[in-house]
Amino acid sequence: MNPISTLLQATPNAGMMQLVLLGGMILVFYFFMIRPQAQKAKKAKTFQEGLQKGDKIVTIAGIHGSVNKVNDDGTIQIEVSPGSYLKIERSAISMEWSDQLNKPAAPAAK
Image (cartoon, rainbow, N blue to C red):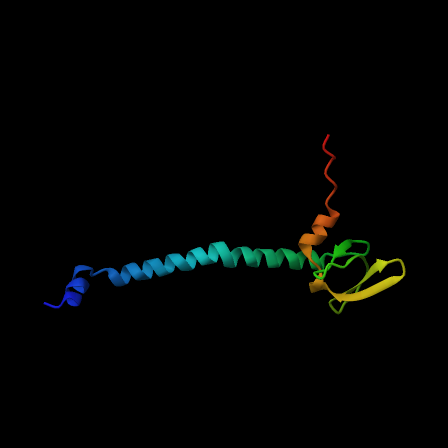
């Protein structure tokens, strides 16, 4: 008798087991990689849409400034120093860095 055919006959549910393992791997990828990234992107978009005049921001490139004007074409005008303005895309604003900038300072350790 052929050893390969013996192996295949010994495990009649091998195909079903492979499908279950493949499904499990897909679920792991979804819950640990895809879903958190989608939630993060949704949160960033909400943050960028909620920007108002006077908000302090940091761009992805590391430029610090405050929002001077919100345009309807998906751009904002920021003031980087008194009288110096830049026009940037909303998508160029870093939510994480801007949140750190606006976070109240921690009390000094004694």
